Image (cartoon, rainbow, N blue to C red; front, side):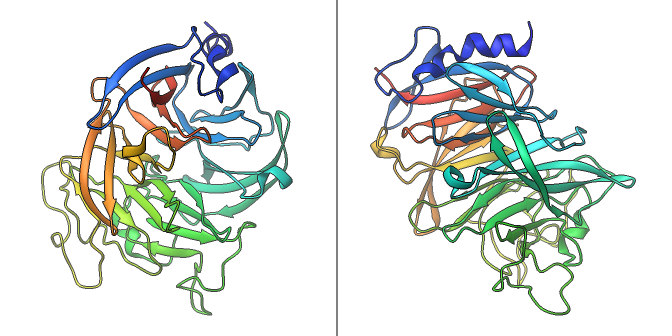
Length: 377
């Protein structure tokens, strides 16, 4: 069945998406239980091809990227393909990746996106923005042609997050060349901090006449595929993939070296050790780490009222772990973890806090789904 047709059938649920009291009969629903809340998981769309990112528009519509290069607009129960998406390289882990709305999107319609591109004989992560006009992107602007070219097709990073001052954070993975994550002469293995037009904020930590890349905010990252802002403190949090073990939860701070590949709690896929151990002076420790790996991806703090006991929890999707982790954070420390949806058997790629006080998930497969978590009846 054609994807648009499959989406149309499943997305009949979206007609009442923001009506919290109504669950459309056409939506597939399963019941689940967590420590503090019973909840149900509602399938809003299926048939997505490796969906990567989700964004909510002010009018209640949603945008979803597929890694292969399609951007979908989902409004009033109907999927529509958005035209004007930049040319991408859909190769390996690369393709059309993250989305972020400008903080004043309702007025200016700027939509930001990251994606993989072919550069010379290799691939790199790129940042662009365009104005969303109906179902078309217009005035497309490439804001950053990152210095992250390698011949591999993995570890593109690519998450985006605006902070409370309207500055844009962007992650780039080590691109399969770990040692370059310690080299400030490129963008590999970094979190970047940019202005809304792709410029360099004056207070970035590596601004100076001798700095080749003053966009860099932190470095020593392996493959950060999750990035979010705390709704109260404004702090920027990230999760990144380790190798065989050693996934990390990090609180991102200016100028900090997060250690990869010199220090890690993981091991090489061969089982051999990596680097110099787990600690080294001048290199930050993660807030938390996972051994074995769960492959953390999209993440969001819960700030709604539908699940009172979850207020302030950090929800992290897991790919290889096939679960949704609920992390309890106190004073920037991890004090508890609950693992949800382990019986789902799906790779959870993105996690978003919806404007209706509910959580939304994307599952990563050739028949990916858009899911909503809401209170049980």
